[in-house]
Structure formats: C-alpha cells, structure tokens
Amino acid sequence: MALEKRTWAEPFKIKVVEPVRIPTQAEREHAIREAGYNTFLLRSDDVYIDLLTDSGTSAMSDRQWAAMMMGDEAYAGSRSFYRLEAAVQNWYGYKYVVPTHQGRGAENLLSKTLIKAGDIVPGNMYFTTTRLHQELAGGTFVDVIIPEAHDSKSLHPFKGDVDLAKLEQVIKTYGAERIPYVSIAATVNMAGGQPISLGNVKAVGELAHRYGVRVILDAARVVENAFFIQNREPGCEGRTIASIVKELCSYTDGCTMSAKKDPLVNIGGFLAVNDQAIYDDAANLAVIYEGLHTYGGMAGRDMEALATGIEESLHEDHIRARVGQVLYLGKKLTDAGVPIVLPVGGHGVFLDAKAFLPHIPQEQYPAQALAAALYLDSGVRSMERGIVSAGRNKETGEDNKPRLELVRLTIPRRVYTQAHMDVVAESVQSVFEERACIRGLTMTYEPRYLRFFQARFEPLGA
Ligand code: F0G
Image (cartoon, rainbow, N blue to C red):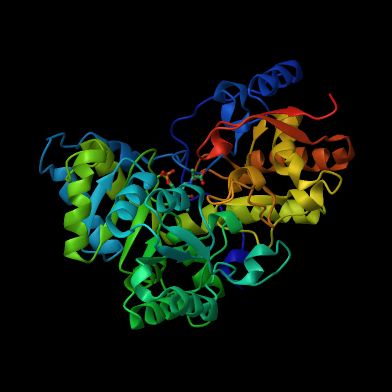
C-alpha cells in the first residue's frame, strides 16, 4: 500500500504547549470588521486555529532549541554560518551560500544579480514576492506551467510540471540571451501546493542548459515535493526523501530558500548557487540589503536552528506525518462534498471559492469573502489566494484574473493535532451549508505592492 494511504501518527511527543482560546461570536465580528475583512490584518490573539500560513509558524524541536544556545554571534566568519553552509552543501548540493533574512531577501539578491531590463523569466506559475522582485528588476514573468495546474479538478499527479514545448517556444521567441534563468518552484504554492516531477525538473534542466539558460529552484517546499515524488513517480518508491531532494536540486543551478517553510525555522532563508561569479555579485549585494555575507539577515543562533532544521526536515517519518496531516484534512473535506483543489497539495488544503460561492463574481473577491466568513464562523484564520493576491498587470494596470480563486487552509508544521483538523473541517462544512448567505466585498483600500497583505474591504449591500 502506498505510504500516503496508510495511517500515520505524529513522530514526536509534545513538550511545551501554548494555550489557544476561541474568541466569542461578538469578538469575531468586531475583529474582522476592524481588520477590513482581510485575515492578514487580524491580531493573532483574536484567532483560534491559525491556518494563515505555514511560513515561519512551525514548531521547532528540542534539538533546534538546544542548537540555538550554540549560536556564534560573531559579526564575521561565524561558526554557525559554516555549519549552515555545510548543511546546504551536504543536503541540497549547492556550492555557495548567502544567508538572507527570509526567502524574499534571496529573491531580491538573485533578481538584482541576474535580471536586466527587458528580460523574460519563464516559470511554473508565479509566486507573489518572486514575481514582484523579477518585475522590480526589469523582468517580465511568463507562465509555462502545464494547463492542468489552472484546473482545480484535474487529477494530474504533477500539476507543477513545466510544459516543455511552451518553455522551448518562449526561449525561441525571446532568445536565450533575454532569459536569465527559468524559475522553478517545488511545490507550486499558487496552484495549491502541487508538485513537479523529478523527470520534469530533469527535462527542464536539459532543455534550458541546451540553450545556455540557467535554472533556479524555489526550494521552500522541496521536501514536500520529494514526498509526492516518492509516492507517485514510477521508479522512486523505494528511494529516500533526502536522495530525491538532492537529485532534484542537481538539475538546477541554484536556489532561493525561504527557510520558514520546510526547514522548520521561524525566520531565515538563503540564496545558494554553483557559479562563483553569481555568488560574488550576490554576496556583494547582500552587504547592502541584508548584512555581511556570513550572516545575511540572520543571527548566529538562527543559522544553528536552520542547519538542524534542514536535516530534520528530511526525516522520512517527519515528512510522512506532515503531508499526512494535510491529506487527512483534505479527505475530510472531499468526503463532505466541499469543493477543493485536487489532488490535495503538500502544505495546505485549498478551497475552490468559485465553486463554493458561484453567486459571487470574481470582481467581488469571492475567496476574500470566504476567508472572512470562515473566520466569523469559528475563529479559524485562512488566506485568500485569488484575484486579490494576483494583483495588477504591470503594463496595463488591469486586475490579473487568475483561473484559480482559492482560500488556503495552510497547515503549520508540527503545531496542530488531528483534533484541530476535525474542528477546521466542521467549520468549513458549516460555512458550506450556509454559503448562500455570504456576500461579495468591495475593496476600500489598495496598497501599491503585494496588495493582499494590507488591502481593506467592506461587504457589499451592507
Ligand atoms: N517562494 C514561495 C513559494 C513562498 O511560498 C514564499 C512565501 C516565498 C517564496 C517568500 O518567502 O516569505 O520567506 O520571504 N510564502 C509565504 C506564504 C508568505 O504564506 O505562502 P518569504
């Protein structure tokens, strides 16, 4: 029987607990109004179960906490940096490492180092901060993901795959000299945490390298991706997660890492590359935007926790329980007839807001409205991943209208129990039963960049 189908249990016991409390109905009504119906603007004290993000919300292990005491806070040449560098070289296989304060710090260094005005960056679906850094550096993102990724009902096992013909067409149309790199995410966040197959990454590497184009991996959730490869890709069943991760990275020329995801820390990231010239430029830019190249944006203790977290993230029992918990919630919701993105992804369950709220047109922000309704029902916090997140076209200023209009229930790693998942499923079900009462929203404040973080809304027809 495939591992993902068997029962799993948490491969840890709980040593420290943080109490949570359910805000009252009146408190929830007040809080969401104050937050402008944007779950990013809620105070966490007003949240019961926080599924806003899996980013920086993981529980660290006793080994990680112990490692923090070993942090070397030297400004230059910290021992903790060398430990982190060795972990990245050992587990991901890249040669040079620049620590950054988090993933977007690495995206900034990479984009500024490699992209020039007029460049084209093909990738397997955009990510918000990644695309913005590419655009701010003068580039234009071009989506080359397979069409199945945009279809919430397609059961394709690797919806993160690149459409190779499309990628080759983009390279031929614009010319390799205008393509600084191909941007590959594993897994693809905006598609619902969907994996890319090992075979596809290999083929992307071969194709791009044939034209002299680099491939850069967004490695934030590469371990979750490896779990799906192990369970779904022919020939990979018996392999270790660590060997799959290392092979996947080997087809790419470097990575940006938000260490707040798979590597199990609350803050941190890095840029890793194999090319010394790129490293030299990025390390030099780091001193402007992050800090000296041997700490970037991180404290020595943070680098220690990260070095330990990288290794823990690759344990078979860890990743099986981590993704297993997400699949558990997904199954409860599909069994209840709730429309979600299928197959269930690695870091969360994504509600299909278009199917959930067919009476709300996309211009009235159905996913934003659904996230607010879920919070009102139970104090469960989720996140919009639809038209608000997609932002505006950088040339025309028009709203980008993504086919996927989703609400993400993102599961932090090692934080909640199966009982919490049951409560979440019950709440989603009751919102589903009452869905006809949910109204659309109007945007009353729109910030210039990454508007989903800070935009404010009001219910229509109030
Ligand atoms: N790449 C991916 C795929 C991400 O999901 C994120 C962050 C980043 C890059 C940027 O990393 O936050 O450390 O600067 N995703 C968070 C989320 C915000 O909730 O999905 P960061």
